[in-house]
Length: 361
Image (tube, rainbow, N blue to C red; front, side, top):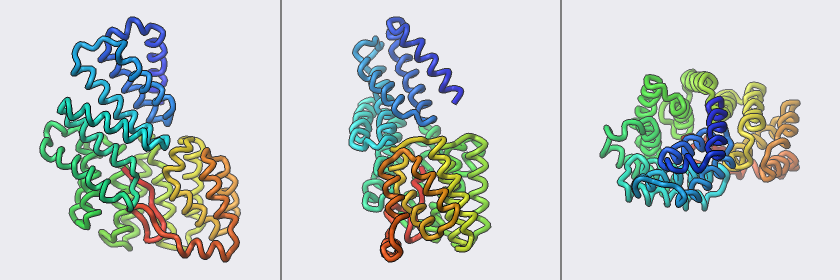
């Protein structure tokens, strides 16, 4: 967050002296790319969109040394625009921006940008079961490109291996997928890639539960993975993933001991606080609608003072749709609730057979 403040000050200075800095187009666009990334990191998604759209608008006012430099700059800008449009729920716009970036990447023969676009476009579809083939196809293209150029693309290893592991798990090659996840944790720890490291740890847990990849009853191992993920997320301030750690921890308590209502409730309320005080984004809430749906079912099925706290806190969320969904479930009559609960089916790749886990990676 400190770097974001410095970048904000620098941006103000650049805007105040734009006639000077516009002459250095490539460096100017590189700065905008970095600043937009910092905005995304601290959840200032609207600020990022405004920055990126202004850069695209300014492209013909700037003096690039070559067409190649211009295309390189625009390719990165459109890629970030794809990511941030997805973050605010503008999926159609995200796909358009992603395809525009990919068009430039192909023209430039930029393998790194192509890989990022394959992954970022796939992420627009979330992890919905109905989009499985489309997502796996995009992942496969990214993996194939990396495999052909591993030395040139070494900087992308942590990201690509994360999706390669999931690709094999979803193709029912569980042993290979789990080995890649284990190796990914070691690689991330050795190379200080903790942002991806937390994801490798969480994916091991949800993959074990969803597909019984290893011993589904190995509670000790699963909690060890969660505690390590929590330690990294807190220590390295990975707030976009920390709420997922808390949610999965709560689910583990219930899956391994249905009587652990209090422990699970505390995890879920801490998770909710992350949305209220850290994320503060209606789009991120709606992207994770299945998670809030589970929480409403859980607290409705286990009435207590903590469930009252959940209901009151949930009304402070940003999304009107999410607040409405929670209220609807919490206020169901018992027979209506029983029917809704019994007929509920998971929508995402990773689930416990009835309710979904968060989208990871």
